[in-house]
Image (tube, rainbow, N blue to C red; front, side):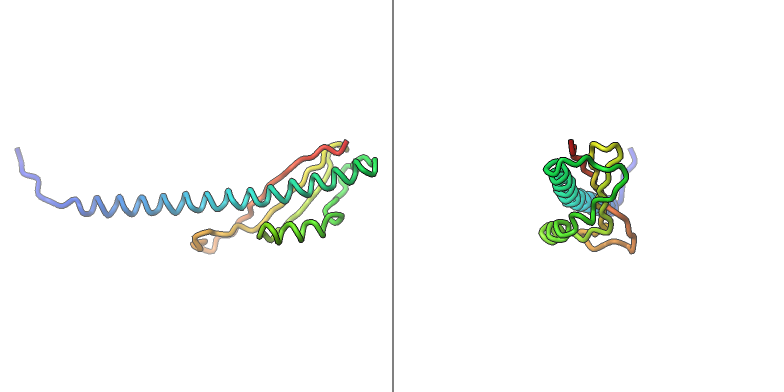
Length: 130
């Protein structure tokens, strides 16, 4: 048998570095999920508000009409409560029955390590207006 001389310190350092990188990746993925859930809460509220208003007034949704300006006040108030700054808000009906709300925000890094990469985090919700 040959004697094995050496140290396992480089292996330990590599394992620590790998676990640190994986931890940062999972933290960022969790942050994106939290941001998506906040966007989803806003899109749910907007879709339900427009659908309720249309149903109350007995009006069918118009295909392709943008309903976001009608709920701009709710969008601002809910955004402040949720702590998000929407970059795009859209509420449309594609079939004249269902309203689809889309809310997008700029990606915000939880750790602060964004590396100057920018992206969007979006969420959609649907509500039946009839």
